[in-house]
Length: 200
Image 1 (tube, helix red, strand yellow):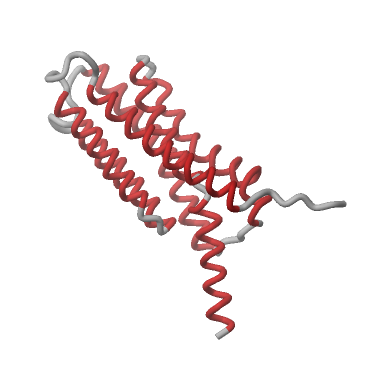
Image 2: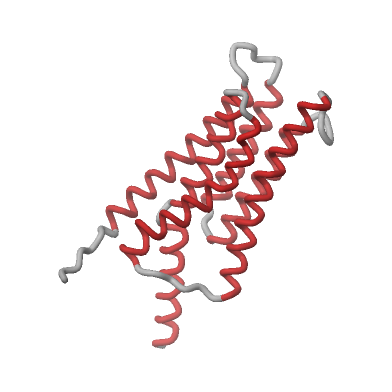
């Protein structure tokens, strides 16, 4: 019985350490909104740098804000490998996005099909959903769906809406929604787990 209780407590602590603080949500939101803003200001060469954002937000946030509040969780080797693979995939995705837009711009032709941005949105959505599987957090499935709909809808409306770029508006709005959700989770985490000061 005590082993079951200990196992549940360990699972709760792992979830708390990896999902409840909202840092992953903030990282995803910053990447998506940064993607839209870099394209909006015509700086696609900087898009590849967004692959570093999740690593910086995750590592610095855990070290500075999470560990002092809930302690350190040492995951097993399997979980460490899954997180390492996820971050490597994120960095490669950033590089892939950069190459994708450079090739599209140089060739002046569509890439892979008539709807390259929709396909890219699908790949991105699948990547974010895989993060949800990793963290066992359902909200990341919704984030993935939101991003896919924003990119697919924006591309389908491109040319029909002339006042603004519907694709960039959709991407930035999707990123903003995720960023707001992450901020709410992060604020709730800080309120629920205040920093405990220890007297010397």
